Amino acid sequence: MDLSSRGSHCPSMGGDRDDRPDRRGYGEGWEALRRQTLRRDGYACQRCGADDRTLQAHHVIPRAAGGPDDLENLVTLCRPCHGVIHQRNRSFDDVRDEAPLFPTPDAPDPVARMREPNDQCCSRCGVERSDPTDLVAWLEPPAGPEEPECGHLTLCKPCAGFLAESDTGCTYDDLTGVGRLQIHELSTKRLDASVRPGLFAAPQVAIRRQPRTVRERVIDDTPLRFLWNVSPVRWALVGLVLYVLVVAALGVL
Image 1 (cartoon, rainbow, N blue to C red):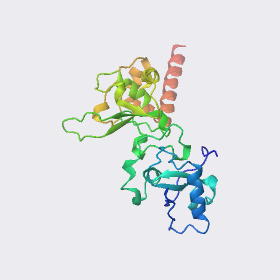
Image 2: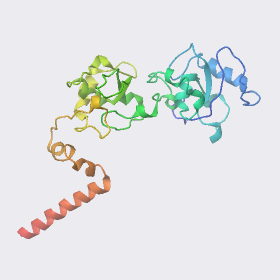
Image 3: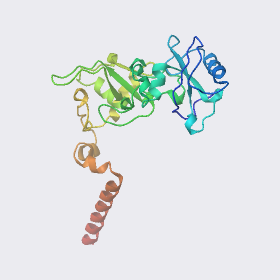
Image 4: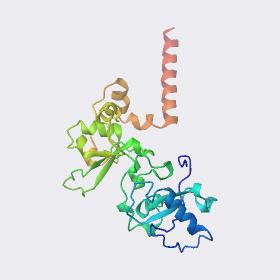
């Protein structure tokens, strides 16, 4: 079964390995289908791989959106990981933090998500990455004198490589991600890290990278970057420069 091209959200539902009946009213035949789903998935969560937690059947395409009650539209999740998918369902609030920060490398796309939506954004540059394989986490970063402690800071790979090779207290040993991290990949991508941290960068990672090119010195390291990153403004600036050049050329002629 290929779940890689399916949708994501669905209403939560119960069920676990001891085959206790689901009492949420999913209709005749649901109990047998739920058991078949768990059996097909080897009685293991398809996001984190856990086989020692309460397991539930998750609709890949939500029932509310017309998702059918069939085996191809169901995937097994442990209750904490089910809460990761259903961020707005408060019935999972007591267990969501027990889910791993990252999914396993072979998690199907519909459930291959970070534990919290905020974890999809780099704590340094602020860029959002929907693919967990593009992210790493700095575990147990030091807290500043006026900053609360935090368990981790999520980083894009370029920013992670830059920080690990800067004097920030972050080392490659402090980083984790989906599967085994490739230090060479992070080291290479560090050159793609933004010159300036984002406006809301965490203090531990709000470090400037030395610009290397003329564009980085003129735009990325100055307030012009705020204008340049807005597409209409960027094209307006390009048009203005071209206009000035044409006028100057005509004046010379």
